[in-house]
Picture (cartoon, rainbow, N blue to C red):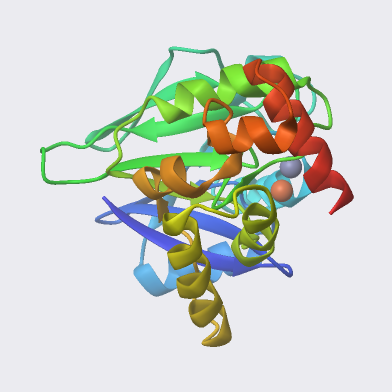
Length: 255
Ligand code: ZN
Ligand code: FE
């Protein structure tokens, strides 16, 4: 399975999964760049995988389905009624196949109440897993809590944090540099974070994408996966995971 990253709007990423002449799209912000890529690849769209109902993630559903009427539209059961053209209603623990690969569905509410993530485990040990996490986990950050609580988001991020370090994190926005600018203010003594910040600054100066990132790096540098680390507890002046996370999230909202 090949994964193609497509830019959309100002900072969205759409992901196109390809196996031969079959393709699936994750969170089509808009249809046209997806159609262009499918034409370039000579591939037919057989699935749309949505992570949540926001317009910048489902905006292309209708037009794509009109053009590729055989495509199946997958999203969360909880988002029933909020996803254009939804046909498959997913719950935590469900499995979804694309050609020879199977994605595990994680229910990860917090950013929205129906948010799901799609995780393709590696086929062989040397390969990375592939995690499509929408606006739940970002490179160096996490999504805002529009429809959920800190407790829900901690539980959701805990599910993602359990995955192997060698998992590529295909998040839906290029927010990494601004996320890390915040991260260094709450986790100032973290040497891995300092190195990452320099690397991301350089990459962005060169207009390079910072997505996908690797989950192993997120575990070491993303403040929203580090509620149990002493440095974050000290910054938040809290001990309880939900309170640490909630305080850090609140600081980011004001940053
Ligand atoms: Zn969103
Ligand atoms: Fe978004």
